[in-house]
Length: 201
Image (tube, rainbow, N blue to C red; front, side):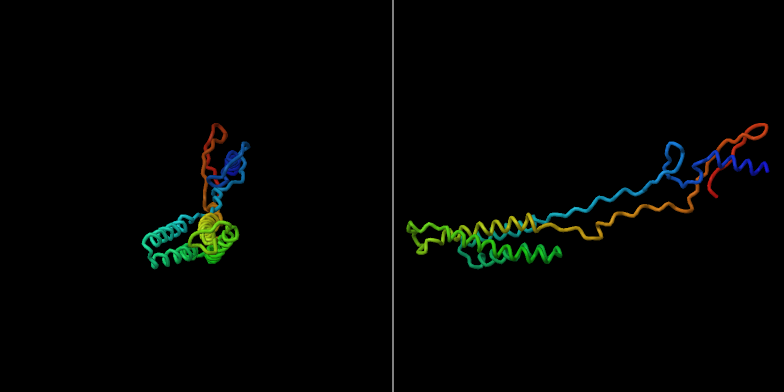
């Protein structure tokens, strides 16, 4: 009977003995809810617009070479690289919709800007080597539309969305069921005092 009383007193003196290691306690010594794993930061989209701008920069360089050297091959290369360079970047990033949108933007915007330039041409003054008087404004509109398409492509379409699996937060670490917490506690006994081991068993 004395032995049972001894053990009972020992466990009452250790209110935290039945809790696993690492369990947070409040001011009264009671276990509080806790989470060992910190919440994962939400994934953010990554920008790959520098790659599309690089292809457009090479297309511009080829266009300048074509104008200076009067090279037809450089002109064809500039047009092809402008029309297909950035869409290829989107396709390599496994974004087919962005690739299709890039192609459409690069075809539609220059044509619209060119038509707008031709419509606003001033034909009241005769222009040398321009019988229709709208070639210069049309060419200017074409260049503006191509530049606008390149900028919008890199600013709007060149974003890699995070995959669904990367948005799953890390699972909290489960406390092991085999964790044991052992502590020493003094217990008063007849004609002196004793020490007991406390813990879940």
